[in-house]
Length: 119
Length: 109
Image (cartoon, rainbow over all chains, first blue to last red; front, side):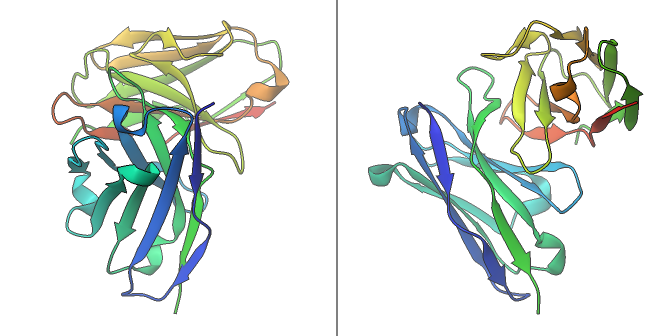
């Protein structure tokens, strides 16, 4: 069965960077895009971007360009999302989600990783 | 950037009633629209993709319709487990870029 297992919660200071990992199993990792979506406390969902694990190609939402980097390691079926120059309003749960074949809709989701930014 | 506006913000209904949730796009998205359900403390769940196709394992009481700029998620007869927050999401053509609506909270009346 498809599973996405994310790394654990992080606490960071403003200005620092954070890297969240997402280990995939149960399917061919390189066959499906991987999305990253975040959700601030009590707020809605915000799409951050995707990575094509096969080519390494990426597409980032405008709001995150310049601060986000998505990478992958195909040898261990793991995707990464790094966010730099953290601010307090980056405090959120970060999700990875596999994109369906075809239109790429996020279908299987990780459990989420809480990133807290606080001085 | 395409903006999705969901209405109403909150919908109060009773089990057994029919729920109709709306999502309007600021410009045409063709049929590139999906719906998600999210319960507290859980990741979102894909319900409907490409405007009207039910995702795997989604009960038949959930249906989606619309194209262009106006879309609807209908729950024909509410079950207790359906009370949650619902989000729509659109996808632009190439490169695929996605945005979410702000959500509709479906609460028990």
